[in-house]
Amino acid sequence: MSQSNPAPYLTAVGSKQRLLYVKQLGNGENPLVFVHGLSATHEFFGPLIDAAGLTKTHKIYLYDFEGHGLSPVDSASEPSLQHHVEDLLGILQKFDLEQATIVAHSMGCLIAEAFATQHVSLFNMMVLLGPLPYMLSSGGKEIMHKRAAIIREAGVVAVAVAVAEAGTPADIRNKNPLATSLVRLSTLAQSSEGYASASISLGECDVNINPRQFLFKTLMVVGADDKVAPPMAAGNLALELGEYTSRFSQVWATDMSMKTCMLFRRWC
Picture 1 (spheres, rainbow, N blue to C red):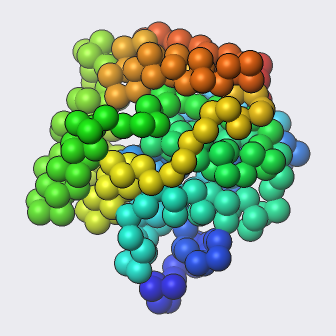
Picture 2 (picture 1 turned 45 degrees about the vertical axis):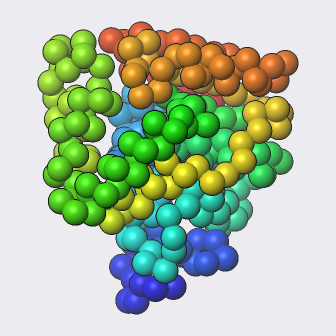
């Protein structure tokens, strides 16, 4: 590893022994592994876990992917979505997890979907919150590369406001300004290189994703007004899942938290 004298709260995972922050909660038998999105951390899932009471029924594993939150940037690695997939595999292997339920958000959904394509036997079910299109348009790729260049030149402060506004529906910004502030704060908390590297990884999306291989229950939850992960993208994924899809739930953004908790209690 390129990092020396690692912090005691970091865990080495995978064949490359990448150092990641991993947090365990709950005493249940059924494992839940959470994968956050770009500019977020493991704390993103805290309100959902608490509101749904998941620690009472599940063993929960949360982590910050490389370069985000408490997980440092690995200076020896090139930006790649595949290495995020390998890190997720490393976590499951580290804690001897089989038949896990993977809960992912935004960019984390691409990591989970690629992981499912490569390691379908390790899944019990998958929950995708705001899944992104797994084939970004050329315009989408260009945006991510430009964002990475801006961040490397001027830091995350240069994109924090735009990211918060793009990632928060207008009605939420108007009714609950705190939500926008939380997204902005989460973005500002990231290291510039970690965010830039993840942006390039998302833009390149150097992984194969084949929904036809998802031979397990899949739940998708989207915000009706989500511009980053529009309902149409999840609907198209549901169509590709075909006979194997279980549910595609379009959840209105104004009451997404409550409905998502209800879905978790019913499904997980």
